[in-house]
Image (cartoon, rainbow, N blue to C red; front, side, top):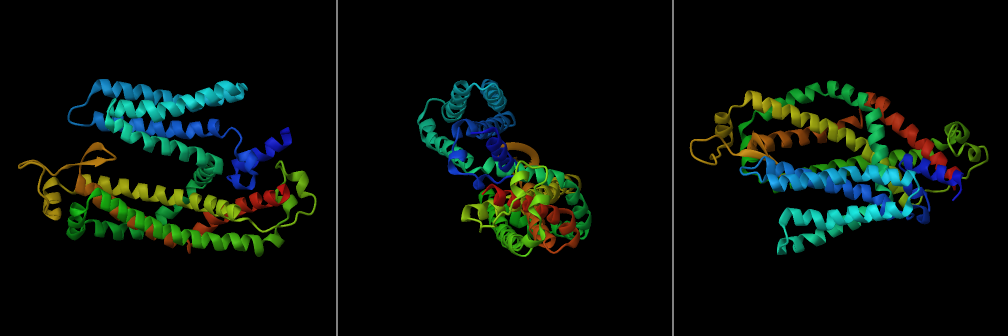
Length: 375
């Protein structure tokens, strides 16, 4: 591959459009490129297991120390892989990538469950996660996520503006939060059913966002393409020289359509998640300050874990937290409902369109002009 081709490929990956590139480009060094994703998942898993044991009733410090060592190794692995790549040590990079996957598939389950039948039963799940990481790397999911995070971070100011405009919604949800019937529902809802409810609401929001953005992409290709000069859009990019000639605007393939819609959906979804996370933290703090344990028991009509003590302490992905479980459920449920309303309302908010959506469309227009020139 020539230097120019590598630069162009990196440009598309940096802009979150991996499916524009040929399969042979996306499949090159896929094991090595997928290792950082596996390392990240492994480090997150190890840290959560460590925190769950640390906050339990009887922490095992030897177990915690072993998990801490594995977590440190997995956190350092992506940096080591990058250093080997920069120095051109291809064989060492591949060996390190395979070692990282072995740590995730073999060592982590052994530390978690020891040499037992449970470890053997868990092994297929770890292998499946590793294979999915390789497949996602081939599809370019990592580059799509990185672009969406970068764009959402750049446009973080728009989120602050919209949160200030959402104060009437916040006041309404505060009233709903102090409702005994909601606390009774939260007390009797298992964590599994709560996540199922959240998943359903998230699916509704996702369908709405995808439908809206798909229309925007179609309008961008059809209605606005004649108003965009490729030479102007691609000035200062690796494809500036190709843009000087007439570039036919071929229809997007199915993979390219999914890619373009995915980057726009993820950029908006990240802002919705940040908004929802902020509300969840707000309601948790409000509940801790304003709702005593006795009132929690009264509203939720729940029984204490043991007679004479406050309600059951909550857990978060296995990590014990000093907050009643009912409060965690109620805060999460109200925050997700508010996030769904936020998702729908932003689609018609002119300020949101001006601060976030129009820059997003303009950025995607550059990527699509580059795609036409590349082809």
